[in-house]
Length: 115
Length: 113
Image (tube, rainbow over all chains, first blue to last red; front, side, top):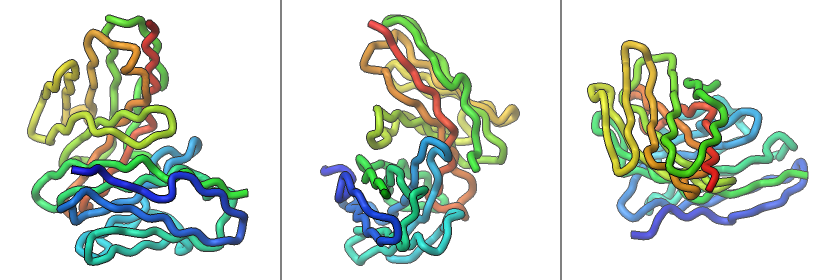
């Protein structure tokens, strides 16, 4: 099976712009989570989608949003970019969540640089 | 904020030696997972241990979990240069948290040839 794919891998944007990142989960996986990784804050949870519905949201401003499509692919959007948004954005997929424990598989990430 | 703290922050050993990393967390968990990350890349899942398990093995990896102390350890035996990476523990809390993982700050392991 193909792993989790993320596009683009690298992105340079200017303050004030907006950006959309894409994640394709492993085939058959219905849960997609997004994480932000920075040297200062480490790995922080952004949000999780399952069957096109947002299940959980981390403590990030409303500029960060996401969605999931019927084929489980997910996108996250950051509007009005700030320098502090420069980070590695990681997507993870799993079969699901709930009472059963599922392992999460991460993609290679999108490196976003805001100038 | 991070749920866990990892100790040590950095570890440098020689090939063939064992490496032990520790992770502490603050709240009750459903399971704890260990991940490896090579410089600036994605996370690779290593091992998952459930809250009702005390020890788990996978190849050269051994993970222990002590829920009374809210701590876990990852032991890599007979380390190799290719094990050089950052290692993170991540906890999943109850079912209501979905798939959400809370990560520790990581341990940077360097294995010298």
